[in-house]
Length: 442
Ligand code: UGA
Image 1 (tube, protein in one colour):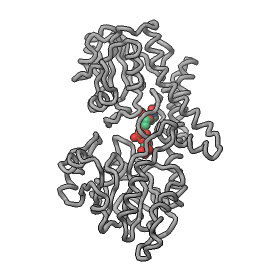
Image 2: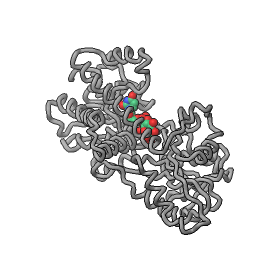
Image 3: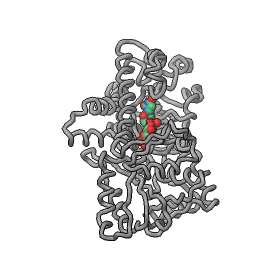
Image 4: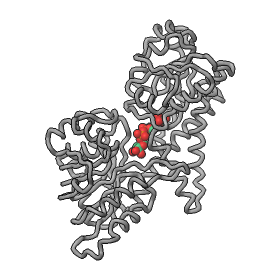
């Protein structure tokens, strides 16, 4: 099929590259000339495992093109994906400005039979609004068939997006007419789908399903973090408790790691948007609000523990940070707990040095002009440090040379925000271990 994707961001690029790999002809449209130039020469604007290889291969195959205008991309399009960002506004609601601008551009250019597929995460009812907007002036042009809008939310997780796309758990198709549903099913036919994984529903249900999934995931993290806090208060070991939880098939084994709270561009944003939308229909959304409160508290708790360890005086203390991205295998630092911690430490006069395998550039841009020192290696940022804070569970931090670490640090405390290390192991080298979700206060 001929596919146009508007928005060459994270979702648009993964979708475009993987659809081209599956044999479709894809044109990705974006207004950012610098980004397009990089993409045309095989450079990605972000880090995502495997994607750069697919980009190179599909550019070479000629099935993947990049354009700066919707009008130039549209001829012959069978379907158009809208994959632009819907970031949070100050009140927490989703900002639909980009999406509506693209829809207006489409309305002015798409005059043949065409289907619009919304990949962006949008409040329930946005598909209705887009369909009305796209067809507003069509009725007087009798030769132009109506544009149909379908919701096809994405469930990719950063760091494993290519694998998620190639082998989806489920593909949700929210269409209000059978023809659109069938066309989208045809698009996804080359993927590992067996009928069970294609889920057809009406458009509003599909839009809501996306929010429901992220709300459920966020709630699970806040629940395990709250339980971890209680466990440490009661002198119980949350890892042992997790083993028991995981043994119950109704609870399941994944997404149960206690830590510093969820970050990233999706869970915090989607939860805020859902809470804001809930207000518009008069629903209190108590669970969602608590989930958010627990998550915000989890990040603050870490800073409190560090402050307490230094008896309330962080001024002049050298703190090394391992890991800046909101999770491993990505350079994304949006809503990353590490940045909130760094800002808090700097505010109190601490001297911060940080290392991350891929996210230092993004972190430096996000932090702006700060005195944070970014080091060339994990060990180098620990030279003379009074404490180390492990913030992201990258593979290279999993089994560091503790002997070398103990020798280069001035202090001995390792704050482990991800429950990555065993305290007994660290103690062998004279290091102290404080696991945010495991121990009592240091
Ligand atoms: C999330 C969802 O997992 C995807 O299904 C969804 O498509 C995506 O949002 C989206 O809406 O686009 P993502 O934000 O990439 O994906 O990352 P996750 O792997 O879900 O992690 C989110 C946060 O939760 C991270 O900060 C991670 O460290 C934290 N987390 C995750 C935990 O603290 N504990 C866990 O057990 C799992």
